[in-house]
Image (cartoon, rainbow, N blue to C red; front, side, top):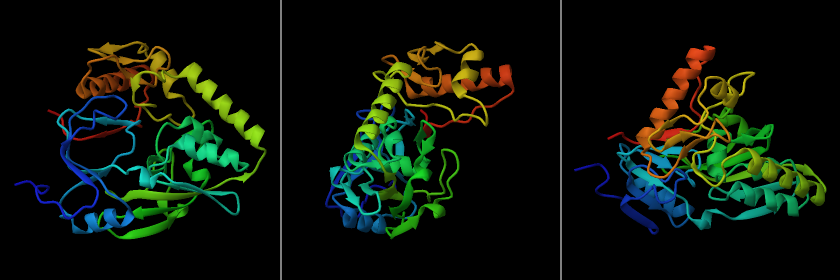
Length: 299
């Protein structure tokens, strides 16, 4: 008997062997042992409080920066439903957003309210929860520049609000506890002109369109930029542009993106990434660090 065969009560939805490949960007990988969608905050908190402490919990947003290995994910994967995607404008040029809210939705709400400084979220194709967890960033800014506090449901079901300083942010990293789910975040910008904010968001969108393989099965930026370097440039200089293993390919448009051309397995995508790391190390002496989160079991 696995630890997940007896789940605590849940008002939302729990699917045994729930597909993750149906929605994560690479469209690959095995299922979650249990894919759980809680109805609301209380439902999530009571569910986690009653769940066997030995059961691993992995929160997943839209899977835009994720490789799910082919053997699937043991334990519980939590995916927040639309009830966690509300956005509200607050005094002091602040925006409160649920953990399931997309970055573009937050940026657009801030624009409409004349709040500047959140434009970069237009270039982050993930959820607020994912952005808070990994200190997501683009175009010179990241979550740590705008986050005031985050509301979390910890693995034991405790609900806490953490000030940004407690998250221990560094580049693409936070000290968020394992199994904790980000259910809400409070961001702060500055007073701005709606037209100027909109123009900056349009510029970001156009730049992404021109430089990134947006209409492909991909996982976003694959490797973190080393200090003072650009990962894509190191990858290009190592001769990896267009490198392919099966249907897994290094994008020819942007070398720091891996693609699933159609029938790649997660194992092939991860193998390709490791081959890129090896070649870059041989060429430059720099070992690239994965930015994409890799989860689950290999087969």
